[in-house]
Length: 172
Length: 270
Image (tube, rainbow over all chains, first blue to last red; front, side):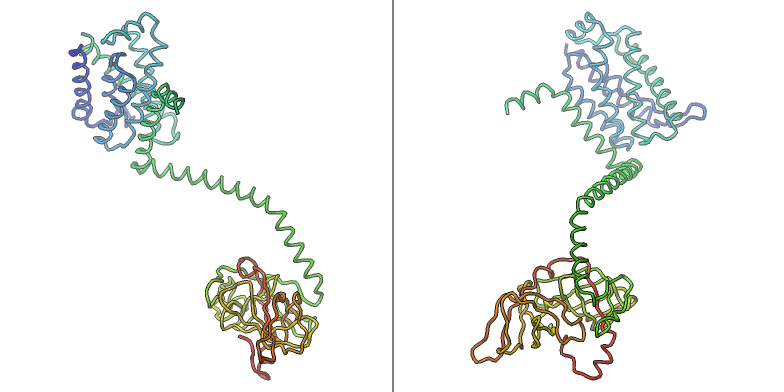
């Protein structure tokens, strides 16, 4: 049990470091579209076991978001988006998982999802995260087409990264 | 209290989220220039809109009071056919024996708690205001202009220990002068009326023998009459109401013949 918890803590530290040092320049470009963001850090938090109290997850999210915001000098943006994502997480799981899957996850220290379920779960949460982040970043609804493109592409890229990361590091 | 604790414990997840989200949003608006500018702009737009609406509603509720004031003033003006209606552009009174010109103004600063009180008006030499003009409002005499700039003027209030205004009792040929004894803003003291004149409590005190104010313009009401031992003159306390405590519209009154008359007489008022 301690080993699993330790692995989650290490995972959180790893994704934060990845976000801060490896993907330091978060401003990605695809074609002519700039200012895309690859959100790496949420995967560690949305993969926490359901046995971890929801309030603890929120506080962890707040601290992680704050750290990222300090690093990128975007006070409050990542924090707010991450908090929204983590707040919706339990309700999203209740909706996506059937009773048996939910019961298993509620009683074990391991957060187990099939790949299709994880894709649905991740798509919802990453989309929400991206919406919050880009709407707060732009702080207006001007150029809605570009805004939606940025949201969708950033959420997609982040989801792909999350899937790969989960398959490599968290599936064992 | 127990219910509150129960409520908080039941809703701790939502409450904690709202608290942390509040902090995060505060950071967004407080420390990001772009967001702060837009946020302030939006807040200003909303608050201006709300203030405009509430001000409109407040004005609507004050309409009755404003209307009553206008009716009272109209009634007073109609009862004095010899005095013209004051307008923002001064007009010359050619009906009464001495031609007076009235200039409407607003009090922008006034005091009543000092021993030397002044009034500041929003009309100056550009509107034709001159040194020595009188200042009145619908309730009575207020003061005399002592300084004039192009856009503003300052008047010595009747509540000034050096102020002297010529006054008398309605329906009496005797006159004296008004002084002020600090610090009661509702009371002036009329001196110089000989003791053989008849003065009763409740008599109206009006302007008399003045080069500055129209003759008969109201000042106040007698509230106390005294004669000091050995004196031949009354010391009369005059109730002037609360007009020195209020701001609002006033009229600057100009005697068009003052310079001509001053050349023939000694000024008694200041």
